[in-house]
Image (cartoon, rainbow, N blue to C red; front, top):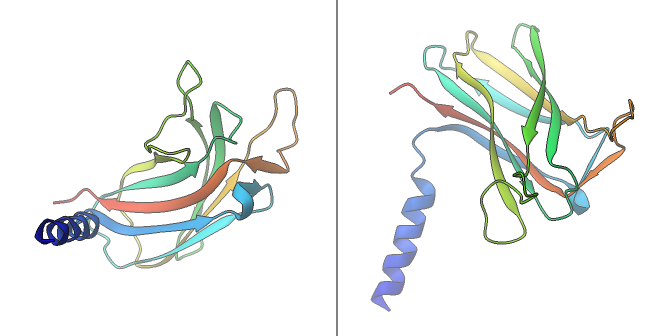
Length: 161
């Protein structure tokens, strides 16, 4: 009985001790389908204009994901209205077609670098918008739906000691 409590305490301590995290939020997709028109938005209130941060997109996918890569369009809107838009590509499988990421079940967690050594130069509300931009070979039109993506998260980690 005593060892059971110890395991629970260690688990809670492990989960709650994330000193690097400045922001971490996930959004889930209905039926593990990311629709072309689903632009996810994360609102981040920034007070610290001194510390450097790494920005990540955290993606969870299951076996229904049919591609070896992922194209995303990500946009950061600054408090003053300035915006930066990036088209990003990530590898989702190794050469043998096995999903990258971590996880012992059919769900794999991928921590994808978005931007490194970012110093937010303005205090205020930042908006991060993310949409999928997957296409089949030879098609210009984006896919109407991308199967196998269960959740997408946005995370900011402080790298300044």
